[in-house]
View 1 (tube, rainbow over the protein chains, first blue to last red):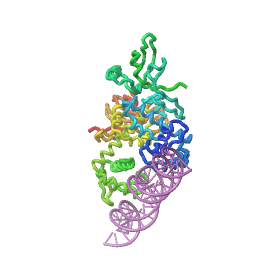
View 2: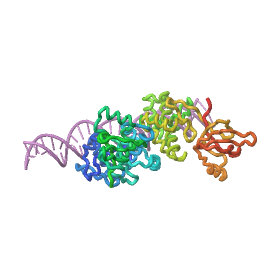
View 3: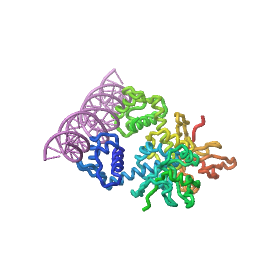
View 4: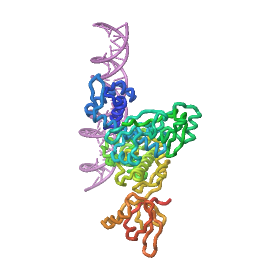
Amino acid sequence: MTLSEEDYIKAIYHLGKGLDQAVSTNSIAEQMDTKPSSVTDMVKKLSEKDLVFYKKYKGVLLTETGRLSALSIIRKHRLWEVFLVDKLDFAWDEVHEVAEQLEHIKSEKLIDKLDAYLGNPKVDPHGDPIPSKDGEFKKSVKRLVTELPIGSQGICVGVNDSSVAFLKFLDKNNISLGDTLEILDKEDFDGSLSIRVKGKEMRISEQIGSNLFLEVLEKD
Amino acid sequence: MTLSEEDYIKAIYHLGKGLDQAVSTNSIAEQMDTKPSSVTDMVKKLSEKDLVFYKKYKGVLLTETGRLSALSIIRKHRLWEVFLVDKLDFAWDEVHEVAEQLEHIKSEKLIDKLDAYLGNPKVDPHGDPIPSKDGEFKKSVKRLVTELPIGSQGICVGVNDSSVAFLKFLDKNNISLGDTLEILDKEDFDGSLSIRVKGKEMRISEQIGSNLFLEVLEKD
DNA sequence: AATTAATTTTAGACAAATCTAAATATTTGT
DNA sequence: ACAAATATTTAGATTTGTCTAAAATTAATT
């Protein structure tokens, strides 16, 4: 599979969003910043290779092979993102461009070893799930810290209140977007929460918790 | 610079071996497993871009820009090799193919951070020197352990005596090719050596030392 | 339901990197 | 120094992925 083919497969997967619905030529062209006629050409090629179902004028849909290829690329992309943030200390919003390149490196052994080295992470620094080797993964959803039960674990992905005071609080407590946060306990009396971030336990008020979004895996 | 251009620049560098001597079309073609006519085409393109000097029928020579580009690619290649061996536990002879892909990833920040993460290594797992960011490096030479002075440090790259007994000794003492070895002390009486490998100190006989090759950096 | 608007495909062209076959230049051997 | 052998370049073709412009199909609107 060429680099370009991989990019198309990934784009079709993302546009399809797991839905069993055909993706339009124009939407692919827009997503990939290319022309619809180029998409038609490539889609024919992918169809030849049985990576997509394609019927003229009717859009395109991944085959099972195509879907697994897409998940394999996404797996690589997200594992590299974890590497860049956890090991090389990139910020969560700096990794995408580099991961776009790294995801095309071809070596199954490399990915297996990288996965193990990173501790078999289940989510990337944006909280998105990392598919397993055989393409399994849980969906993730965005929730306020206060909406989650004790024991939940997720990635900090956004704030409700972007006031200076709130952002300063996060900074002072060494909480960054992309960090893993675990909810250890809740106090009924005042709604305050005991949490762990970067291995450090701390207590936060209900107000803080109701302004911080986590991306968490859905339970099955 | 395209992937293919980078491959040519690297090949020309290696064939030129730092010598100030023109590299022939045929030798490039052989090295790159391609046809001489293809080389001619590419070499014209590289010449347009001022990466090489080229005169018809007279071979090709890197410009200073071309030389620095080559060293930048080699730097990336060797840093990734260190990563694969030191962090992902690849064997030293498994890394080349993957590093050939990784060397083309474009991100200066990535390489800076990778370099720091690996502890700014000066040599790769084959004992070859890693050029600095601005293209400086020392040459390396292959020497028997017994030929080196106290304080020397190098990478295990080969054996003189490939008898089962000798290889078993290395294995039992957890010494692998690609490991860094430091000479701590020498005993005048019997020529035995005190060394450190993988952080562990041990004593080896002169016979062992005279059968193990290290790749060491030349002193300047 | 007919016409207009939007989408999609086709046809033909182009750039990059390669190839084959033929032409040209250089080197070697006597 | 000249013929033969070798190396290199040119010319023209091919593949991949892209593009533009025009034609065909589908969707929307009145």
